[in-house]
Length: 170
Image (tube, helix red, strand yellow):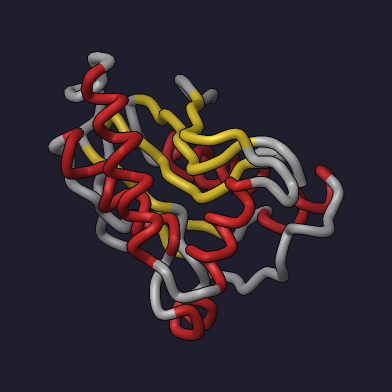
């Protein structure tokens, strides 16, 4: 099983503008940054002919404890911004069944092990034949997105595309 395509709105650079924006979004209670970046990237994708590519947009879920602490899921905010210009609904089809520590200081192998068997399809959801756009905030090694995509594909998704706010860096 493999992912169809992977896209990112920004290139992540340590101490760069992308890192500053992501820190505002994740740690400074600025969910509107995620929505606006999603809207801007959604317009770019729609203008590039991607508007009817997906049946549903699925954000990578946070653990309920982490979401309660933050007040929102930054990936879901980005997904909501994308959904308007792409005219596609956002659905929380995945849930995080295990709390994991932050991935930021882990190697690729440690990241893969950290998210192994962490995600599952929400009970009662049928995704057979759906074309899914899976959304996260940042991709470095791809461990989290890979774990989520595998769950979606194993449960019958027709194909999964990935999109993140930023890609690269640590």
